Image (tube, rainbow, N blue to C red; front, side, top):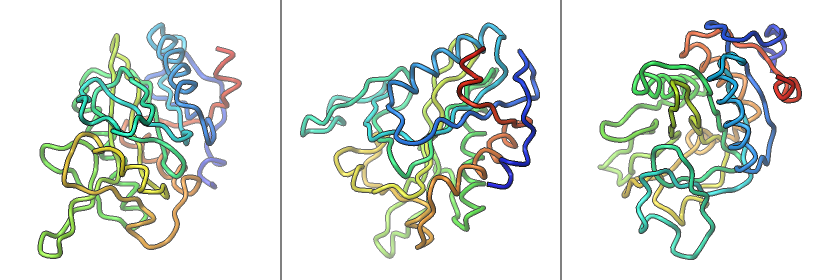
Length: 238
């Protein structure tokens, strides 16, 4: 937590190209609530009334379907799914998973997605876990071993929307979440792979609270930004 306390607390400027406001929303955040806030921040960012901003949180359990989700990928047992306006397919968010929604101005969405993956790869390395990209798949992965019958395992996923040059949605990194939530779906529409977490890969419990300050630092580095803390109530006064 030390890095958070050492960061400069200052008012949000308008369109400061070097600043990244870090807003922690807490735990058990309903998906629709965070999505609504994203849209509000996005509008402010497009208008130049806010600098680049990232919302950091843990969601209440929820399945969300991106625009490429196929009907057969939805839970067969009727489990509710929230249809969203991001790219990608079906996934789960919930306790034990760090979710980050960077709402930033960009010019190249592919490069931006790569930077989010770079940030997650570096966070994993900080906790002693080797994560990599896999050709043809989004997100970051712990590589399997076919000789041992061990599949590739997804550690983190990326799903984005870009409107008027500003991003929404972002990435999710598995820290200490229960993998059984993924049993009802094919995560991100990718069959024959597994899902894992920092805790599962290291054999010790690594909670979101422990990962969060490291993820904030690595994200800011990947984006070439100077992070500063902004409380949610101060954000809403803008």
